[in-house]
Picture (cartoon, rainbow over the protein chains, first blue to last red):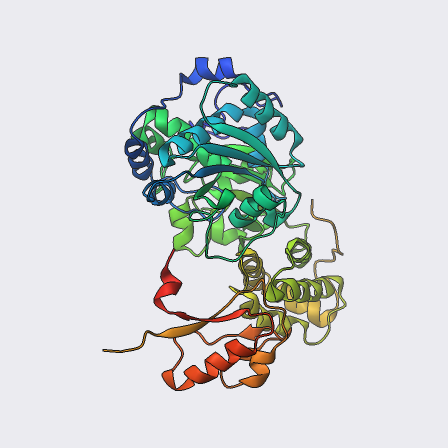
Length: 416
Length: 76
């Protein structure tokens, strides 16, 4: 197996990733006890100094998020450890939960203490069986150790079930659809209480920052953003895999573990299905670093780095993603329900060589008509992906639409 | 100095069912997209159009349209 160079083993340090969860005793022997009982402001300050950003997709500063809830006017609160991972191209959360459940539990307990919560909900994708079992077993191992109410709620299969308000809605009402904001979960979430909904990888980082400090956290990583991150690397000649990288590792370096080269790659999808396509030459040297990526109009998102090799058609790949995103709409908001369906149908017709004369123009007209017009950001992410496809695969789209043929000679193939 | 706060239109996307009455009634203020969902003006409503905006709010059969103070939009 090819592994990355460098010291990037933190969340995934310890025993080999063989499908087995690390036992509590081994976790304690390796990392020492969880430093609970420190002043909450100290931990939140430490997180702020680390500049840790959320790893669920939006990349919001974690310290600021925690402080906003911790500074409320008293009363109980709830922590939701979000491991729904409905993004089908991503696997990092389920891999983390299945192998290092105690790291995530540590982070969730620290969050509960820091914001003054009495209850922690582990919200885990129901299809992620190994992750679910690992957390259930891990909670049993720690039974009676901590004074919080801990429970697991299964997140139904579905892309938007992991959105923060959908998580709250599912936990309270078994309805995994987003709700209208305001109120946001941070002010009125589970049981109507202020609720911190935080991705499980983010919580695992906090478990290490609490032990070793923000300077230690930032001592890894190469570019503007210190630290490490989990990434899912897919689309190359190897099976999709999860790796931990130093932030600042380049796309080209990850290509090595995916078994592809610059000349065998057509384009790269970054951040997730709500992310962006980029042409390979534009991003080969790009550091995978949230600050650098944001400055270039890209997003680190959920850490997906997907390589589209030259034997595959970008139009077809995009049509498959848009079909998925349209099907994943919770179908509550009209522009998302009808707009994404229309865009996906038109893109699929183009990919199949059955375009209507107006399809391409319609897609470009619909993109701004869907953007920002929903209760959650699902439609925004989907049209961003499509807009990036128009930018990167514009010529191919036009040729497919005009000639009814895939210029590369590849028909509609399922994504690998 | 302004006596009245600035107002803008906001929509509850989950409630809106695309009846499109708001756009039919006030095409100068509200456009309808291809699926008859409203495209609202961005920014504050011109005071001269405030009554029209209120009529659009009142005509919504599912009460999905609101007038809100512009400051309120920035609250977390």
